[in-house]
Length: 271
Length: 271
Image 1 (cartoon, rainbow over the protein chains, first blue to last red):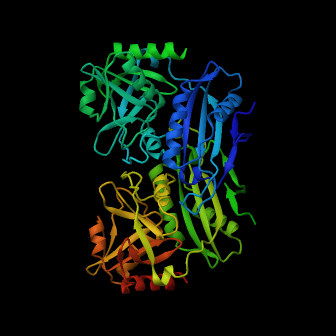
Image 2: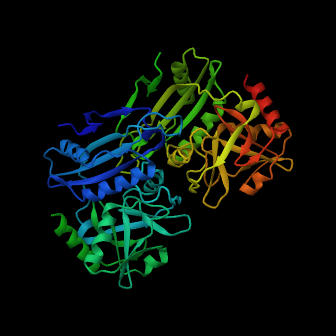
């Protein structure tokens, strides 16, 4: 069973002139393959559609990607499927070629071993020094230009589980690999991502689920001061699901009922 | 003669887990190979040093890169040598692996055929709608996160030779593939690149050369209004050298003596 398909063919390499390498001209998804199926796949594919529309990439058909995920997953029960779509080769410099064929990479990766306590007891966070530049044309989608996250993640080793990133004005936007939620005066608040940040599929799931559970939720600018006053914090991504935050810098938080209710709902829905 | 070396070996492909593809975690240089040697090579290598220091990449020795350029260039008299350095494979997600081996790609590309009139008579420019996000940690270096340039260049076909990009505050920063200079009230002015933009080697050459020719030059914020009032405009990059601008939007410019003097100096120095 091949662990990597490039345009449907078992392969571990791509052309050096691929625009994904040369310019980060493409998108990716990191999908949790659990119990023989991709968790929240419809949300991953919806984000790919949005990203392809934004970048002007031709999107592969959904059944094709699903079939290729199944091939690389084989009979593994827990794995990560990474999908990369690039604009392929060609073009004159930055100029995209007309009618480019999208390069499609589907890989199986090992399920990451996170500490078992993260889910029940929570994680520790820090603020990163590296800031996120603002660009509404790139905000929200999961494109391949990720140097800001790489530099931010390089700021610490194992002392923290995650780092929060701010934009240049000091608004808190997200973690390096996760989205952030805060419970403030009875409402769930998550940062506005219209100017920068990645709109994660697990964030999408929370945005869709909270109203169904009659939990008030709003998207807005979030300051470090607001986080200081929050009763609960939690972070999300497609692999970790929902992790409570027990410490941010020197401020300690308890794992609260809002976080627990959402964890339970996710567990029920994706079991 | 191989036209591509990957880590010194003739090859046209790289691993799909290379961080250059996955995150744009690397740098590149586009070198003019003219008359059997790389033009302004010392400036290219100096920028690579700066970029590697900024990203925490191990830099290949200068003689090694020079030798590999010579191998792929062979006996061609005019070619483009593209060098890509990436952080290689590995790491846990965005987190850079400790002691990563830099992936080194050296390619020969055809010399681009630009219209012959561009150099003597000048080019036409437009303003792009796509803006540049600000991030001082990434500003100036030629990293692989180039989606902003790709989106900007996709805004037009062949109606213009180049497009100018602004930051989110409206400061004019650079062209999609070039740097910008304006002659305003007797001085050469070029945009400050401390927050965004790529500091081109030909821009560096102009910054170094103008004082030697006793031409006053300053680096500062440049507005569209300032460009309206300019007597001359020119753009630069490592391949095109110096192109006068004869039109920006609806404003027409004459090719002036400052531009000509610098073109002559470049011709003399690199002949």
